[in-house]
Image 1 (cartoon, one colour):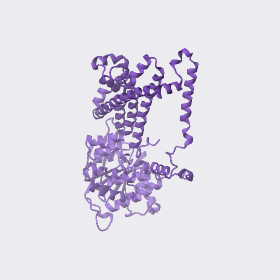
Image 2 (image 1 turned 180 degrees about the vertical axis):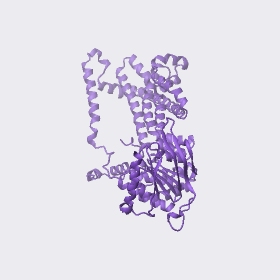
Image 3 (image 1 turned 120 degrees about the horizontal axis):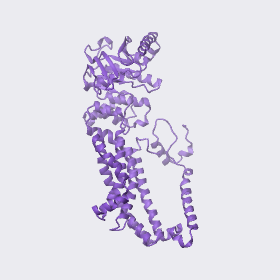
Image 4 (image 1 turned 90 degrees about the horizontal axis):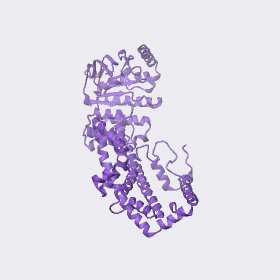
Length: 291
Length: 259
């Protein structure tokens, strides 16, 4: 496949992107171009979901329709209602800050734990079972404990967020560092590289792809963790978690659905952001990028 | 040992002092497998010694012992470890580094200043014919080009003893022969001491001043052939009658080694 149809290279911008993306010595058809025809599944999927929503709403008795209001009512009373949207956006921002804080703590602490497990086999044996336990702990069950220990504030909420988003960071980092090619380690050993040199120049760069995968997973989890934390600890300025509870209690289901959609949008945004960041950093050398 | 021997390129000028010596080396792994038994030979500057043998006979272990990556359980090795260049079976290039940065790696590990190592890397890249590819990442290179980058990386420190662990084993015939020619050019120019491991009898005879045949486990040297052709060697040597005769002898010894 060396031939490239002239029409595909008509627009110079696209050709430049293609040339940058496929610098292999072999002439290849540009891979990154996504023709318009490949975009149809997204709107179709969206239409199917909205259609199903309408169907389900239609099947509810009118007296119970508040449980699943019409999508257009959610749009007008939720998204297009200035007051409601103002509330939801302000809460979204609070939740975002909480999630970012939780994620940062998970990354810093998880990174340190991962590096220590790589350095000391005994530390890995000592810590790993508890990481698994932490991951498996039912957060609902320990929330009363957290409340007694940390109160109702920002810190208590971020602890929930950290517990939920922590696990992927140290485990993926460790996996990435351990999968360094044997020959490369031999090479560094032959030339008397110290442990820190091997960490900086070999193990950490080697772990970047799996670490970025962990960032993506943890970022999504930290949003969930932030909302769950807010639902446990209702005190303080209301984030999305408190709003969800509040709208449910007040039977403002249109706002509730708008709030739910905003919550998942937040999760999607952080997921896409880390995907984009990963691609930017790894694009030049790693196979996972560009796809 | 960095200065090439001047004057005639004849083999008789090989340095009388061996740069690498195995003295009754034995290797028994913790599980009781005897990998090597009583291996003794020496390699001088300007000598190209190749070891051929069946898979699993301990050829690679020989290199690991020479470099100090593995300790022998018997006998001794004499070599200046600081002057060893080790070319692995795989190119082992760091995928996140460009060719240039990969070639600079070893100089970097030894604390060579940036300007100096850039200059050395430029030289090495030119020597293996990778000019114009310095900015590429390993995944953008073909297998042969990766191997040449790996070779360039080991050239930067200008080692006087080269260990090659089946470096061209994974390459196609044409690429392998081209790299053999290129390696001999480097050998003639630099006159290092080379210890080369391969499965290919043709490669062994074409490259070497001496071919050693190793037996299946436990690995012992069961054949020792001097290859009398002068350097530089023409690619056409592969079709020479005397060349075929020698490969025949090595092949026969190798069949005996399998038994």
